[in-house]
Length: 187
Image (cartoon, rainbow, N blue to C red):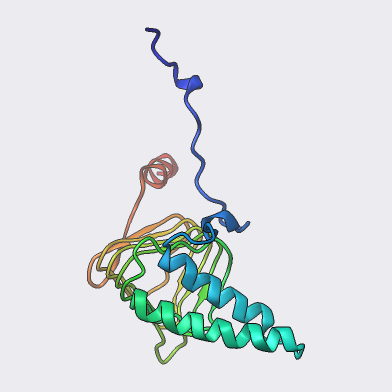
């Protein structure tokens, strides 16, 4: 049996930080996917929000009922008027709380019990392809850069630059290998 060469293996690319990958939110018709069903109800409501057509009024009504049902099933508090770019993934949606003024960029992933809460200076803004770990709390008008990672149970009170990892209570930044090597080259 011949061994597979490195070039023969499929290349896995991280999701884009700017272009939404809508396939991350799609589901089969009768598949049991509570988080995707919750997101679908939010998307339907937002699509019909500005229209006065009878079909959109009915669509909004049905979307509100679906949203209430899936919010109870998932235990998530994600308002219908949330500003969420495409490709959001909620692998375990239980206990997720998102303030309506928060902004979530494309292709983000938020795990269970995460909270995006408003402070005296505003609500959090997530860039593209941000990973928010289980139980993380993002508080106040902070900006999380593209491709950043927030560790489990971290309490983030300050901005996190693009590509950085924040861990701990209160959160501190951890340099990745590439950033550390670049910093050493500059010295």
